[in-house]
Image (tube, rainbow, N blue to C red):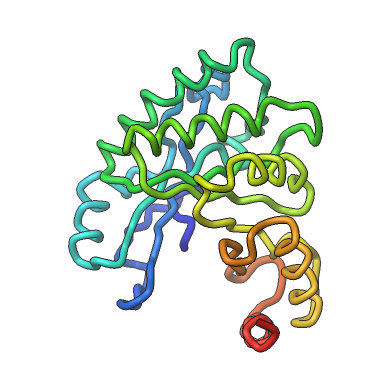
Length: 233
C-alpha cells in the first residue's frame, strides 16, 4: 500500500513501481469532512488530493495492472495549516448518513475500491469515533459501495482504533499501523512493537509500515526487521 497525493507535489501513479503478482493498493490522501477553509461539514467529505491524480488516471493504472486497487483515505493530519480533529457530531445517525452519500460519489467518480481511516487527532476516551466510523464502513460495505476498508492507527491514537477494531473488525480488512512513529531504532525493537500491536489487532490483518527517507527504521534495517517478523511467525 502506498499513500499518495497528500503533499501537494504533482505526481502520477506511473511514478510508483508496481510488482505484478501481489496486491497493490494506492491510498489517496485525503478526503476530508471540511470545506477548503477547514470548517467541518457534518460528514460531507470532499477530496483534497493533488489534482494530477484524476479519475481517468485511476482507471488507467487499474486497467494496466490487474492487481491494483485504489482507496480514499479519510482525514489525515491537516488541511493546509488547519489541523483536522475528530469532533463528536450532534447526531451520529445524521453524520453517518451525510458521510455515506459524498463518499459513495467520490468512490464512483474516482473508480475507487474502498476507504482508509486516518484520523490522527481524536479523544482517547468517551468519543463517538468508533461507532460513527464503524457504522459508516458497515453501511458502505452493505450497500456494495466499497469492497475494502483499512485503518491507520499509531501509538498515540491506538485506544479509539482498538475500540473500533474490537467492535467492527469483521468489516476492516487491513490495519496500516504507522510503526515509523514508534521511535524504534533496531530490527528487534520493530519486532517488539509489531508483537504488541498484533495483540491489540488481528496479526493476520496487521501490516508493517515504512516511511521513505523519514522516521523509523531506514534501509537495510527495515528489511532485517521484516526477516525477523517472518522468522518469528
